[in-house]
Length: 113
Length: 111
Image (cartoon, rainbow over all chains, first blue to last red; front, side):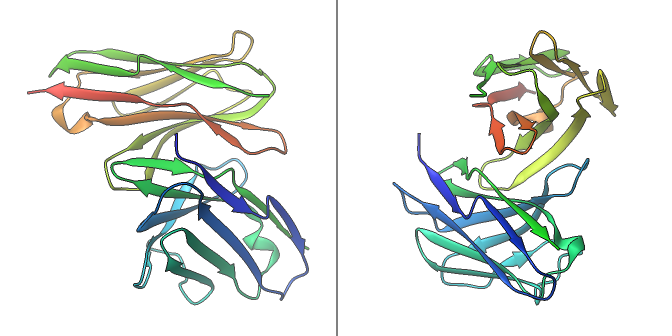
């Protein structure tokens, strides 16, 4: 099946810094990618839908100015957590749409100290 | 290395029928297990989350069970409806590691 990569797999940063997470579709082009996050002991929740060449669509309760999404090419979407705080510590996972099928990245664990 | 499998790969049932979807995983040292629904062109919808210390979770017509020792989970859907048609994914979260998703079961509920 198609492969989606995420980088980095783990990141630890200080409060107030910004962190960028990359999501790449390695062997297919994806006009649509999704970003999810999961807080401890909670379900995985969709944060936003990223469409190549246009603005991302954010789910209710997700701050678009805090979680900047850029989908500048058909193989790359980035999620930037700006001015990260400890409450942003979470597991972030992306997925990319290849036709009707969705392929997931391995995830990024963010820890904000 | 954790591997997750799901049986059957596809299932077609008439409306109103009860059904069971199966998920198996190779490493029982999991943090939790989740069942998701995936509609074509849409993001994941989380259905049920079972922590490693729990044996089952229920939400409406859905019931998920977990048997860690045998590496199995089942998703039971009661009184199926055409709106239940989707792909159902299970995913396991290992301690400190990344999610491992199963390949999914494509469910079609015929009116």
